[in-house]
Image 1 (cartoon, rainbow, N blue to C red):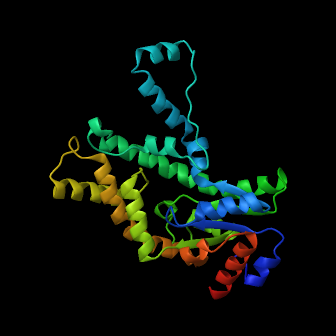
Image 2 (cartoon, rainbow, N blue to C red):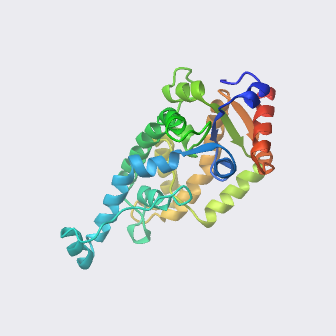
Image 3 (cartoon, rainbow, N blue to C red):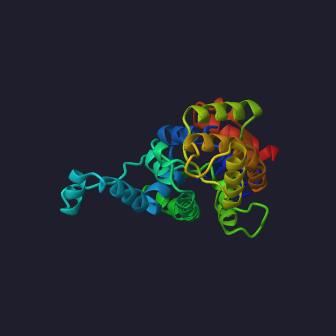
Length: 285
């Protein structure tokens, strides 16, 4: 780790932290708190994915849909309107919409082959956006004068790295430049995340092997074809299995850094609390 003790972290003139874990456990909460109440630069990997690396894919998808409407088609063909996504740190809906869900097109589904193509686009974008972290740390200090830096990762980071490999290029760069912090949830948090996702399912990125196996099992056990599959039900069913699939991958990543519990994160109310929690996590690691 880049900090050998909690005291060293507290004394550091510039603190560099990367938060990872399942979406909904506090990564963005902590990042927003540090950005709003302290001298911290907030780098959102999801935002970088949706703007720098997937922005053109997203906009092109909007345009394909617009071209189906005669009025909008005419306006687009004469450059009379401009179509773009309005992604923000707190609203990643354009990215989620583009990734889509496989299944019945009448219920908003896309062909599984297209779904997997978009998944691969996301994987490449996530790797690139995560590796951009080092460059943004330099920019944050040199251009804006920020002493401290927090990287708010995508919930799917564990799917695009091989943390068991000591030579994994993404893990190597991250561990060499930041304190890696896993926000670990309990069984109660897992139940709540499933309940929340069931209420408002959203597309996510998964490893292709996992998705192919899930797709085959789902169609077999629910007696549906690609054309009759309920897209929302499939992603709900898949998400519940993904939580168990991701836990050991997160745990492997945590061996490169430290672990804090979601309950501990919930008690952080200011930057001093955050510093104390990080120092405690380093010492117990």
